[in-house]
Image (cartoon, rainbow, N blue to C red; front, side, top):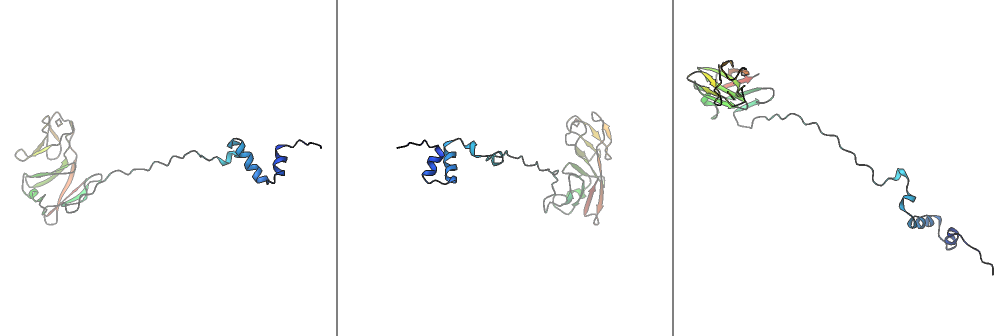
Amino acid sequence: MEQTQLSRGQFLRQLGMSSAALMSFYCLGTTMTACTSASDDPMPAPTTPPTPITPPVVTPPAANSGITGMTTGSIDFTIDLLHPDFKKLKTEGEFTYVADIIIANAKGTFVALSKVCTHQGTTIDFRPTANDFKCPNHGSEFTTDGKVQKSPATTALKVYKAESINSGNSLKISA
Ligand code: FES
């Protein structure tokens, strides 16, 4: 009897396997890279999502705070002088702070200035008797229109517009 040497493929075809089954068999017997192409990359490189743009933080006053408008950024707000927190401002010599602003009743005239001492940033106080502002840290003094009257500060305070409105029951502060 004549013996014929069969190739691996011929042998498997004689067993009745389709070409697709043969391909699967072939792939299982070899490395996976033999059955894939570059376009079938199972692990594409991760993409980095774009960094979101964060807007500046502008915090509106809380409801029922006696303040409406913006107290940071573009300063423009109104204080209710009938509100329990602010009605004292109707009295000469009284003062309060709203955000980074000190507001005082300076002998019957409302003034609003930056509360941040221009020397090293300490919060200043209003002095009713002297009718001026003083920094408790190193003693700098400022007039009610923000000018330095005593060093070590050398730069004036920023002054805001303070306008009595609503028959004197509200105070509008703006840049
Ligand atoms: S921080 Fe105000 S005088 Fe120094």
